[in-house]
Image 1 (cartoon, helix red, strand yellow):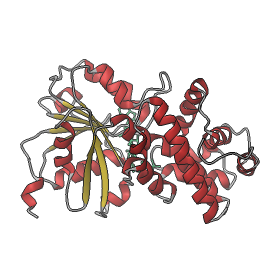
Image 2 (cartoon, protein in one colour):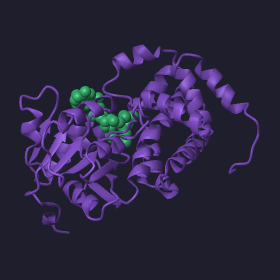
Image 3 (cartoon, protein in one colour):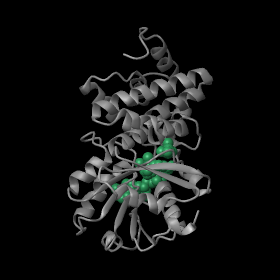
Image 4 (cartoon, helix red, strand yellow):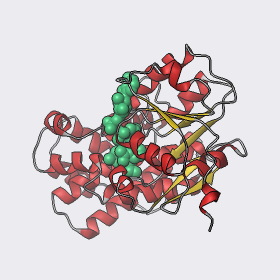
Length: 314
Ligand SMILES: NC(=O)C1=CN([C@@H]2O[C@H](COP(=O)(O)OP(=O)(O)OC[C@H]3O[C@@H](n4cnc5c(N)ncnc54)[C@H](O)[C@@H]3O)[C@@H](O)[C@H]2O)C=CC1
Ligand SMILES: O=C(CO)COP(=O)(O)O
């Protein structure tokens, strides 16, 4: 294969958020020869200067910064042709909307792309191989983003179900907290397999009710990210669960955590939404009670194991 295939350096891109993920994504695009303008709250350059003339604006800020960034960008004149890429994995506490829904509502005319997959940033920064998904409903747009990031160490797939791709990456964080608890309590491989598989069933139920396609959850952005995050101590969400199992308080864990564990906020929003929609999510409910310090990790396990027997699919 020809190296040239991956280099279209005339496209200009701004990346907003220079945390672990924004930095890793900029490394990938820069390695393909793209000139990237990076912006964070601490940048010397203004947001206006950074996004001026950008063909693509990618946001890798954590969920708590999404509305803030959007409000600031609304004050800047962005061309309706500018592609907006969201790489955030979270849910809005006010509206329960996903980041791409918030972006699309704020910029009605702009194409919005979701980027999500099993992408632990530390592995990517080490140059280890990985794959991801870029999703848009508009033909040709995800393909442009695909070209920017694709390389021999980062394989990028396109998809037409942005909501499903986004929800896979977001909802798996709740199950990753549970997986951390499972490993922290040393419950074994059988328990972990059961937890992850039933966790996926919860993700599918919520996602399909939301309007996403079921198959998307069995792809890289669903099952793929679930496997990566539930099995790696590099995952901050897994770390939250693992440390909760050792008896630490959530506030103490978060204080010492490197970066953001989106699953903590996502669990609250998810449980609220699932109750309104009357969707059964027993694992997420127990994660929620655990995060609220209403029960111990052992009690959460007991609550799950003593549920009424039922059919696997119903
Ligand atoms: N680190 C990883 O391996 C991956 C992370 N993600 C997702 O990407 C998002 C960011 O994650 P990380 O970079 O790891 O988190 P991080 O905690 O390292 O960085 C968060 C970034 O958001 C910015 N931010 C927060 N609030 C802001 C505001 N009000 N205004 C402007 N900027 C604000 C921070 O300054 C920082 O640059 C999360 O939603 C995460 O789930 C997705 C894939 C991989
Ligand atoms: O989303 C991720 C991997 O795909 C990163 O997981 P954490 O946010 O749990 O570190």
